Length: 117
Image (cartoon, rainbow, N blue to C red; front, side, top):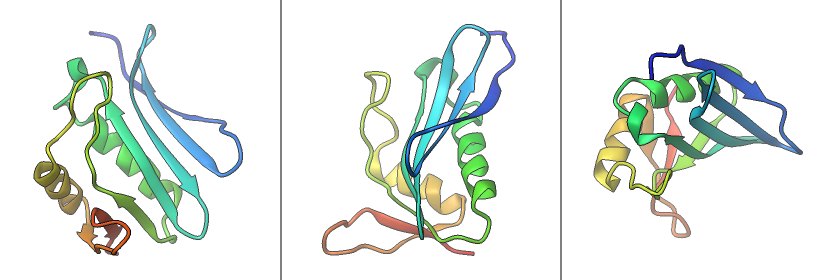
């Protein structure tokens, strides 16, 4: 795990935008989003061996820089990646809040959060 971790934006189909963090031998993390009137962040995942090193923040900052003037939203609902659980719901919401998101629950999505600029 001593390899440099590089951020790469992938060419994706349709309105999908994908960033990956990679070493020379493996994918460390990724962020998937849909680019429309609102940039919708659909998933951030980091390999458990690379967690707590700022990689999820690095991915999120890449997405925020990609759409500096667009509304950005997400559903802060945890689900496993790499076959291991991510952050618990309250911890996940707190992590997004530290990055400028605020809860904006909807009847159809109680986990909805938007970036407060």
